[in-house]
Length: 359
Image (cartoon, rainbow, N blue to C red; front, top):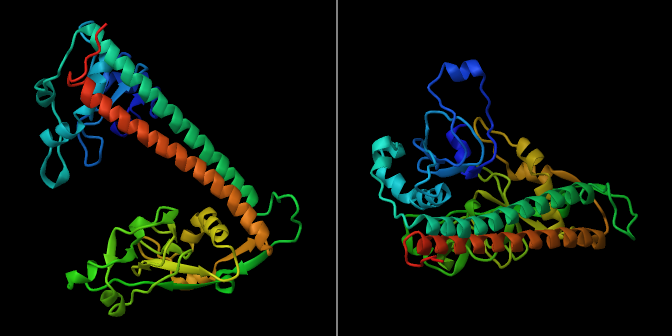
């Protein structure tokens, strides 16, 4: 098992396998079930991450294990160590963002240990809400897979909705929409960023509706830069960087930076085009150019061609089905986030003794 797999939290299986010869010729050891596993090193989030194994396994040198014994409830200890993540990161911080935990740091940790029966009650309560969060995660994954299948059928014309028979046709973006890009007001004039005009950057594009931006600019900033005001229902697409291909739909008139391609629909339903772009994101990115990360230009966007139904009622009907699916997924994700917040509150109360679980 490698340290990256600790992010799975509860370990039912591992990605790697080694032979008996490989096992005999390394310093690894077979760990029993119900150990508390802790990431020791790395620049990512794995350093200090705790996990709990439900199967026997062996690990690489970047993972420490606390083996179970009869003096404590190992699942309680897992939750307690998991709650110490920020502290462990701080204790093991090193130069350049790197650092490492070690046996001495772990042995010096002070852990609040209530009586064994109370440890078990706390572990049971936290496990119950963990199971609820996990079940919501599985349901969200299932709903996303269903949506992906629906997009594959509905956005390609393979499955037609009842009452629509008109053949689909290929249309270029340049034929059905106009494109533009924004700009960034001078950062050397701080007052430009104390206005009431919404100004979006590509980091805010998460395949979502855009209601409000992180930063707002003034009318003066708009007039003295290449930023432009785009109307509500304009589709934004990230043209380069880590967010390339990500989308957003403006809910109110707003401005953007130059990394956003603004697509204003003229002869197609906006939300239908949004789903077309979302479904075809991979192929769109592949059309990008650049020595490192690919870049999408307005010229590339304008030349994009998709098979679409000429009837706007069919476009709207398809978009309505997919929007309903998205709304259901969003509601489930909000429910999961709510229970994750409840779990954090429970941990703060139960693992500190502020609330006691005594028979």
